[in-house]
Structure formats: structure tokens, C-alpha cells
Image (cartoon, rainbow, N blue to C red; front, side):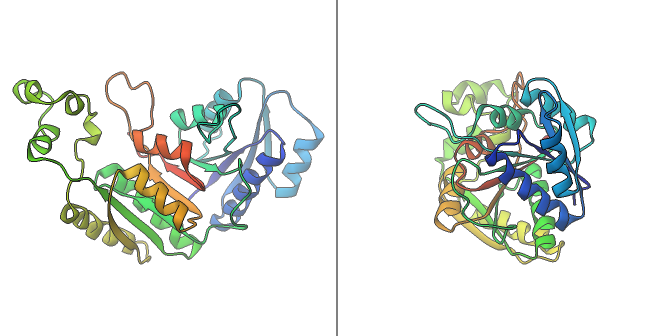
Length: 287
């Protein structure tokens, strides 16, 4: 599944949790592990950590987020692993400044290991939850999650959230953005909805159709998915299930933004990255 995993480290105790997880995952999937340090080369401590894992070590001066992004590309890593960091002050978000920046611009799959709280489990993942919406990007994320679940020998939970819509809202959301008449009559909320969210699933029957396809996708990788349709906003539904059921790993696809494309992360994975109660794997699905 992965051939080269790049794990960012600042040699802190919290970063050690992330590199431990990266090491275990690399061992399981048979991938090369590279430890990446942003800043002045710390010398012996970084070399010692590399020896502990049998990993290549790289130290590059520069701002951490920029180094993690650029060096992962240069090293041709296909998974970047970083730790989350607790914010100071009001702690409104559970993601630090560096992982926040990286999550918006990661050039590959990104695993954010929960390091701002005591770990809820040890070792590798025994439960996995993936969100789908029927879009091609979410199905690519499901395929990758199913492949990982097969490697880990676990049964993935697949959830499709749905939110009822009024008929006029449905028609407006699904209207062609180039249709001036349809857009003129749309509410501001609808008109401002990015195109990638215009598929919004409004009924349980639609969600069940998506899940039927999702189960077939998972079966191609030899895994039996636990598929569920749940009413509610997608991010909140996934967060609630992850919390209540003590999920080890939450998986979601990234979504490209429209317009200026200031960020390469969609609304749902963005919210999950800030509030996930456990490790979060954001699959690079935007093209």
C-alpha cells in the first residue's frame, strides 16, 4: 500500500508517539521509514532515533510546515505522518499550527497521530471508520481504507451521512453553476456552496445506495464492511461515532476547493482534523 513513509519529528515526547505509530505501520505494510527533522541538524539524538527504528534520517533547515511538505515531495514519500499539538490559550482547536498548515497542503496521504492527549490504545489500529458520500473522491478514499483494513486484518466501518432537503433546495444545489436563472433564484447559502458539496445526500435511501456501492468496493479488497447510513452533518456524524465507539483510526478523503483554491482540503476533513478524538488519515483524493 505504501512504499515510503515520512514521519516528521522534533524529538519531543509527543512526536515520539507519532514516530512509534509510523514505525509500526511501516513494519506492517513493508514500507521504508524516513524520519524528517525541520531545523538545525540535532546530530546524535536524531541518529539514535533512526537507529532505534532502522530508519533513514533527514534534517533540513527551514520552517517546519514548509520543510515537511517540500521534503516529502523530494523524498517521494506516499504517506506523511505527523503528531497533533494542543493549542495554548482558549484551546478552541485540537490541532497545532504546523500540522494545521501541513493538512491543507500535504502532497500525499497524511496521518495525523493524536498526541495532545493520553493515547487511547497501543500498537496498531484494531478499528477503522471511513466516511463516504458517493463522490469519486470518497470512493478512492474508501478503496485505500479497505486496502489498509485488509493489511491490518480488521473490519472497516463505513458511514454515509445524510441531511434532508426541501425540494427547492435540492434542485438549487444540483443545478448547473453556469445556469444563470437557477443560480439567480438560489438562496445565498446554496449559491455559495462549493460545487464539490452539491451532491449533498438528502435521504436515507440515497445513503443506502451509496453504501451498497461502498460494500462492493470494500469486498474487492477482501474485507467485509460494516455499512451505516446516519442522519446528520457528515463531520459531526463521524466525530460522534469515533468518540462513542472508541474508534482507533478515522479515514476521510481530501477535497479540492473551487475558486481560488487557497486550500487543498475540503470542509469535512478540515473540521475533522481540528476535532478528531483519535488518529486521522486524510487520503489525498483531490486531483
